[in-house]
Length: 232
Image 1 (tube, helix red, strand yellow):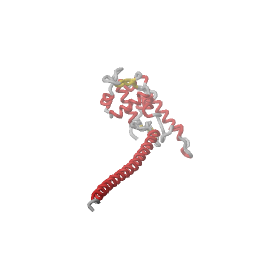
Image 2 (cartoon, one colour; image 1 turned 180 degrees about the horizontal axis):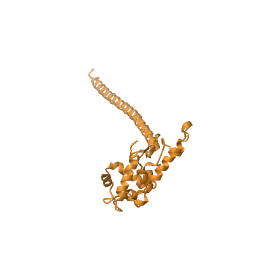
Image 3 (cartoon, rainbow, N blue to C red; image 1 turned 45 degrees about the vertical axis):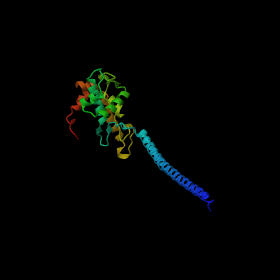
Image 4 (cartoon, rainbow, N blue to C red; image 1 turned 90 degrees about the vertical axis):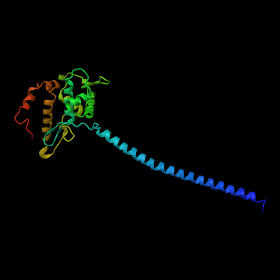
């Protein structure tokens, strides 16, 4: 009996070691399973996010960022009224302010302050005008914007097209692309005439003429009509 005691002690130590090893192995298996589950859950979430972003990217490509959004041209509404966008209004006002500063670069914030325009929106508009070749920009402490042409070489129509596209659209289509049936068959001719009237004013009026107040005769004649300033 005495001789067998060491064997029993060894067996007990071995059992403890096996038990500890089993516990450690069990914990490793649990951690591994948890890791796999986390990868699966977050992997699916990540895939879903990427897919969602992919959908959003496609939409951006088809609709353009408005950041700036899709350019919104002066719209010929179904009632014949014309809606000049804020973007076009800001662009013309910014260039008029820029024209008063001569050839020296003017920071965007100065133009925004002078015309009380939202600065970030104005910076996006000036970027459109630069891409259209209507303004030059310069970086640095003395940087800013200046006209790429003289004020008498820039028409209001050019400015509006640079930031908003075509001068007139009917429900997102050019007037000549509209087509109606029955009683409205001749309506496209009216929409084309509305665009022609816009061209007659905007393409024949320059920044210099607006600055001086010496507008083209036909523009002054239109503005002088008795009901021209009356809201309808």
